[in-house]
Structure formats: structure tokens, C-alpha cells
Length: 145
Length: 470
Image (cartoon, rainbow over all chains, first blue to last red; front, side, top):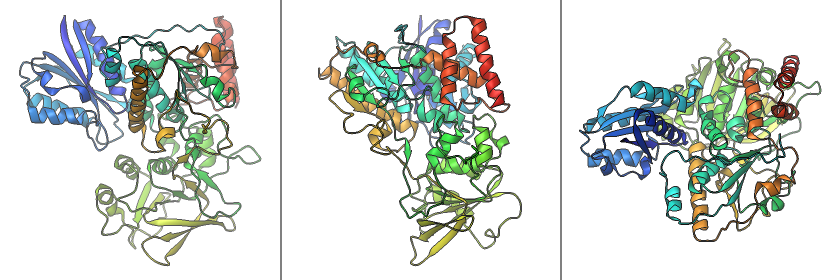
């Protein structure tokens, strides 16, 4: 089985729930997922990872959540070579604000800058849609993988 | 509703442990089967239960709630038009449907069961009762003046099942009026101003209590004065909240009390709205003038013929009193635990070596969901450390021992029945119509124990007919 590393940044826990759901659903595609809080993940461990899924919400003025900022800063500073890594990205946001899903956009750019290849489109959940974010994420996984 | 113990503990750990607390626990060779009671099913209680379930997967957790419905401030505090922010209930639902946490609703600790008695049944007790009352505005208020707490108003708009705003003798709510003052300028104040400035059609997708909204606010107000003691730079609102307010189509915003010295993003955002002679001319169209006053301190509320006078003074200047004629004053200056005589509010007796406090009750009415989630995490880290050190040990019987002392307990399945009913009876453009009567909630909940489908369908139909007639 292939392994996938699922990393989440969260403020309310919704992105963590989605990361768990993504890990489950990836099982359908032959992946064994491990879920990590970005807060506790060492950026250098990304080297050599074949499949990474990043999941994050947006907080404040379109910023990354507190738990994702150190991870992002370390990515930019340590610049691990991710040229052999494929990644997928899913964001949680609320379209009532003009900063809708800025967080995941910031992160996708940083990961792609390090040479990683994105699979599919960035998934986006809109909190004001009334849809369960896990359902959106499951649908996105099935249409991306 | 049930007294029987049909509870099956099913907790699936979906993914490998990834949080500090779980790792700490993973290092323990032995994890005791703790019985844990969380008092209060608001966000802090649910987050505490979630972290506990992850960190101590062998523990047996019950969340007690005084209402038949879970989620506290998420259901009754977060504004009815901010459904996105209420999305956290999706993860809380999983606590009960997947992670084996028990919901024990309709149990008012302190009233239905003595706290000490309840606490003696559990190895660990986590108090998460929040701060349920509006902090009163401590200035002279003449008799006959209408002052309403923002928390009470938001609850009422959110369909709270108990009377939080007094009704007239005819059972209707008195309209707030055309000229309003909101004291305070944090996010709760902005919620109030935004809701009062919206027309019913702007509330699509919400679950606002339309009937009450129409009585309290039959038309958009002409003027809403929002009063902040502090400078714009110190004001507590989030920029995103203010930007959302500024973007409303039916309001004209003017700002007073801004100094040249004020700087920062909030000052930058609001400076273009600074009051000038041109903007102070009252508009003739049916728009709502929202006036944001900074550095203005309320002094007294007096009653006049058919309205009220809010007297306030400019902090920066001497002898600069102003009088604002209003029909109602809404206070949004924080929350408290309420009267010490209220037996359901945790007092000094609600303590002990195995009792922890979380969220607003622990840290004061500051911060929204994310900050209180972090607090829940800290408290759970402490509990886990106390388990690891042997300070906390297992052995108390848990819910089964408490249950025999309780009346009708609303289970999570019962609540799902209420929720399904609310969603089915939603008017057009609304996501649900909340049941606002506690007894009706209990009747709808009790239909979930009717096993005969036809009988159950009839019972639900009866409730729908009552809904139509109400």
C-alpha cells in the first residue's frame, strides 16, 4: 500500500475532522494515511514523501491558522526539496468574507514553489453553503484521485 | 427519552494519534477507564470532550446539558445569520454518533441533581457552563427605561426556549423602536447591529426566529448609535466583522471620536466614514444610519415622554456631554456568571480535586471558538498529566449511578429527532425553524421512543399541525 501524509492546520477543529475523513477516504484509493497537526510536524520530514495532502482553514484577515504559521514559516526557511512529491490541497473557508480560502492558496503556492506537483484542483469548502465539510472533502477526494 | 442503559461504547480512532495529548497517553503503558462528566454542551464542553476522547480513549464520557438541545452558544449565541460559524456542530455531532460520548440533555445540574452528588459519581468532572448572563451597564437608569442585554437579544433571535426578553401583557414583544443605542463595540455588539440592520430577506439561509424578529423589529431602525468607551485602535471588534457590517446594502455609516493619533487597521478601515457636516444631514430615504462613536462614555439613561435619553460624555474633552434620544438601549459589554443565588451557576462548592473548569467559566468571557478550543486543549493536557502522575484514578461508577437520580434524560437520538423536526418545518429561505418551547421539545423527543412507525408518524404530524397553528 502507498502511504499518504495528511497535514492539517486548524483553529476550530473542522480542518482536523476533514483531515481524518480524507485519510479514511484515501483508503479507497490504496493509500494508508497518517494524519498530523502541522503544529507538530517537522518540515524536513516532508523530504522523500510521495504523497502529501494539506488541509487548512483561513483565519483572521485571510491568514493561516496559528497552528499552521510555524509550519509555513519553516517551509519557506528550510526549503526542503519536494520535487519527487505529489500533493493535493483542500481549504476550508466562508465565502461571506472577502478573504475566502486565502489560507490554502498561500500554502499551495509555498508547497508548489518547493517543486511538488499538485494533483487535481484545490478543494474548497464554503462554510456558508450549509454542507458538511467532510462530505465536500470526500467528494473532492473521489474526483481528484 | 430513556432511563434504560442502551449505551454501547463505540469509539473508533480513525487515524494514528497526532496530538500532544494522544502521544502523552500513548507513552502510558496503562490507561485507567475513567468515568468523566462534562457539565455543559457548549463549544468548550464539546472541545474538552473531544480532546479527552482522543487522549484517553478508554474513558467513558458523559456531557450533561440543562436544555434538551446541545451546543450552547453555538446554537443560541452565534448570530442566526452566521451559519458558517455554527459548522463546528458537525464535528461535535461525531462525538456522540461515532466517538461514544453520551449526551445527557434536560439535566440541570444544581437543580435536577445536586452538584456534589453528581460529582461523586465520576472520576473526573469538567465544568463548562460558560458565562450565561449579560454584564449589566453600571450607570443610573431611570424606571421605565428599556435596556436589553445583547446576549439575551441574540438568544431570543436564536429561538432560545425560555423567555429572555419580557413580553407585553398581550403576549407580544414590544418593538425596540426606530432609534436605538448599542453600548459596546466588540463582536457581539456588531452582531446585534448587523442583525437589526438587515431586512428579513437578507437573512436567507439563517434560522432566525422570524416571529419574534418581526415583533421586536417590525422595520429597520432609522438610527443605531454604537458607543465605545475606547479609541478605535483599542476597540474589540474583529476587522472581518466590521467589514461585513460596512458592506450591508441598507445602511449609512458615520464615525465620531476618531483622532488623528488613531492608527492601525481599524482606524484605516473606518476613517473614510468620519462624520462631516455633509454626512450628518439626516437622510430622507428609509436607510439605517449606523453611527459608530468612539471615546464616548455612557453616564445615565433617563426616561422622557415616549422615549429615553442616553447621556454620555466625550472622554477626550471636558464638559462635552451629549444626549441621544433613543427608544431602546442594548448593552454588549461582556458576560458574567449571574446571580450568586442561582443554584445552577457554579459557586465555590463546585470544586474538588477531580473538578476542572474550561472555557469562559475558566478564563472569562474573552475570545471566540478558537481561543476556547485552545483552552480546552490546555485543560485536557492537565487532566492527562494528572492521570499520568496518578493524582487521578478510576473507580467511580459514572453515568449509571447518576441516572437513577435523574428524571427524563434527553439522549442524542432524541435530539436528532428534534433537529429533524426543526429542519422539516423550516419556512422558505430558512435552514430550520427552531422549537422555542421546552415542553414541545420534550414531546418531539419522546416520539423517538415510539417504535411503531405509523404511530410515530402520527405523533410527528400532530406536532406539525401544532406548529402551523402556533
